[in-house]
Image (cartoon, rainbow, N blue to C red):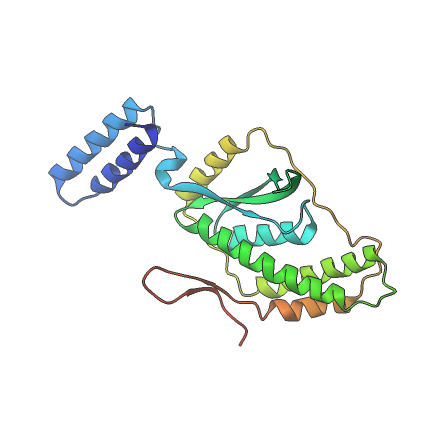
Length: 236
């Protein structure tokens, strides 16, 4: 039996230990304790609480403000901790392409929901951002065009944020997630995202137009054997 298999069995035993039948409960607890001792599993082990991680690739190859803000917003909405990691992706041409992936750590299906939400919302926002940049005058400098696009994106996120409610974890889940992240991210350092709007010729309308567009965003996640489940509502 591998450690992962043992963890699954321990979780099942602990669930049975909550049984109303005192004999079944005692037997299940003894089995759980035996396996925990054999495989050196502590009662606070994050994996016993169902802590997992899922990652979603960012649209840009470097950390930019609006993409980081979206990742943080999604992580908070689904009760997840967050970190970013760089990757080098091999292309068919044998050239490497750098990518940024946002990793969501949480309990149960929350990381999967966060992964899905980030992937869908980042695509929607990036598409609308590109359309806004395309509407800028031809005389607009490339850096100014990017800055206006980023400002639009931040407005877009503000529009979506009003429709997302923060998920509240139990104290036990919070402790398990924190322990998992501490172990997983022990050698990681803080990174600062790029602010491409500072000192640029941006306009209030860039933000306001993004805010209006963000309020129309919708997000659905398919559920087995039924209709798609709305994770955020669509505009009324």
